[in-house]
Amino acid sequence: MDLKTYIRDIPDWPKEGVLFRDITPLLGNKDSFKYAIDAIANHYRDKKVDIVLGAEARGFIIASALAYKMGCGFVPARKPGKLPYATCYAEYELEYGVDKLEMHEDAIKPRDKVLIVDDVIATGGTAAAKVKLVEQLGGEIVGVAFLIELTFLNGRKKLEGYDIFSLISY
Image 1 (cartoon, rainbow, N blue to C red):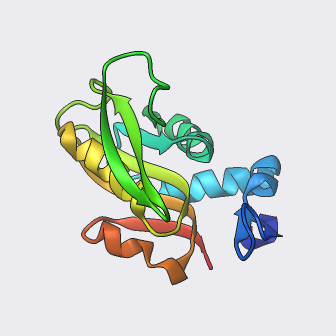
Image 2: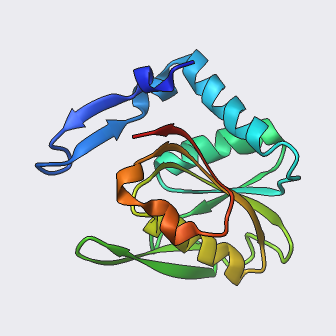
């Protein structure tokens, strides 16, 4: 299946000069969504994944469906102040500043096998923050998977040494 046919290009969003790759048509089509989830699950089927971690908001969609498909738990990584229990955090760089992701401090146990999932890898900063969170809690990262990889932004550089899998490349 050519998943690119289910990605909508939106020029100049969220700001002029940016071409946004919109995954909502892929998610809204039962065949393309199932194909994408199945393809990622098949790639990691022999890794004995305990937890699938996804960051808000689109990462939640992919990661939770994948956790269900793989028969394992789902852990959310969120923007600061969104989780009700004690948290740990990791910072990452934005184009103009720094942001952070938080996770419950008991969400991952030492030696849990964790698959990190998101919709897009661009510069790799958000994914690297998720890696840091998992390792901070003693989890073992079995892979980092994405629907879309924007190869021209070299996000893989920040994830060297990890199994990186993407379904669609631009």
